[in-house]
Length: 242
Image (cartoon, rainbow, N blue to C red; front, side):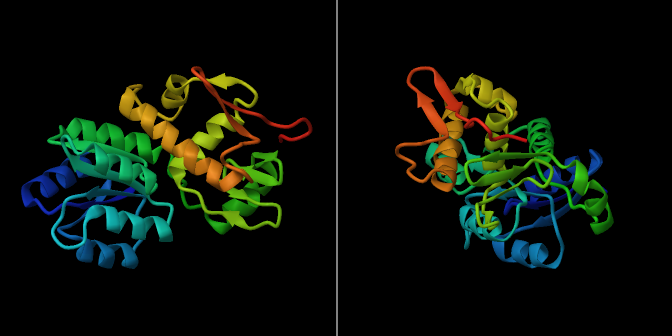
């Protein structure tokens, strides 16, 4: 099945150029000129990825992304004007998977789309889900269980822990490398980021959000600990694991 992408952009020429380029690259692409039009499309049919312009008239892209993140695990890439670092940071805090700075090259858009789509969970038919049930990969830590194939985390009572894909990506990196010191550069590389000050900040934001969801006391973490001046280490207690 082709990945389905929605491009939400108020500049007609740019919107059509991105849609045409991604369509020629093998994706099923829909477009919307504003948040209202995007909501109608998103409520009518499923998409794997949304590219959202932040600075749009009316409802902005950050608000639309917040609404999307509350309803679905769709991938989100924000498009932001050069120099607006605050928008990028706020977008990452809201659960965005990546961002791209305007003006951008279409090849860069394609590269970021491919990177995010590799991390987007694909729909699984009920029959396939039953067939795969015995081979799914799980890791237990404390009272939590991470399902790598289903890309979800459940708590001790079986309740699903709401988690953005970007947060699960980082958690998976730690769980598959438990009890090892990981630098920000190593984490960035594992999730497909290019190591620079912005990606280091993005990693820190994701870890901060993770701690709020899996730590009883985020200020004094039991699992995801900081090694000052070095990076992070995920302590997997003895007896936990697959």
